[in-house]
Image (cartoon, rainbow, N blue to C red; front, side, top):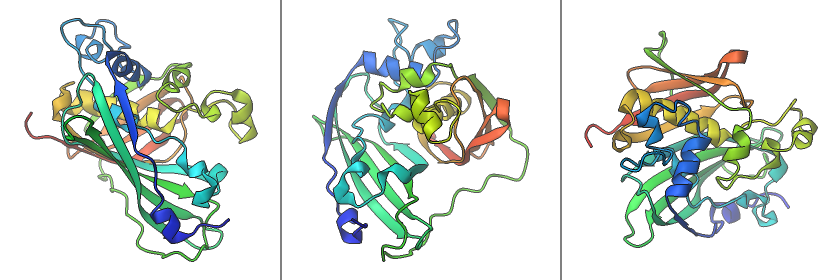
Length: 287
């Protein structure tokens, strides 16, 4: 069944209600590389190691209230085996509590038909709110490239243009080494895709071994931004947007290169490959 533009634009993705606490917060922090230096009190605060200082890594909003692989529903008309996560972004509206219950509603915000054989672009947004007060905590947004679904007669529209990085050398650099088993940890953030876990599946689709989750790489970049621009003060973390440009193999070193205007990109050092590009970070001016 091909894509029906109106049906997909109005597809009802069920609201997700999730209760979380210090254990989920610490697990997320560990899964994106925080705590690798056991003497760095700033990092340890995000992984539940300090009784007197416990903080929440802002990028956890990307996995709170995750709607699951809703595009695999045949009613969407999407060829689910040929989709690619193209872009991701988030805006933090209020500091994320250490524990609580949230509701998250995901909706499609745009759909562009690039033409027969050229695929389509699906834009979506997830709003995360405190379940009790209704306080808007965060907005997450993304772009999915539907490689097998162009030519369904939808509008060609205007493709969002990526942020252009400065044509100068980066002003600041932050490196974190991913762990060989990092995908096995990250999968507990509601993403058990076997592409990241089972070498047989990875090889079947053309990779020599399992690759890291895109949102894990995104979280590692968020760690770099939190460290460099916010000095690990999560209340200063405003927003970040970026484009996925290549995969990451667990165990590779990720170097996030940043400019003072908030532009950034992330490089897999061992292969000298840009894996996250066209990034833009905005800091909250005061906490």
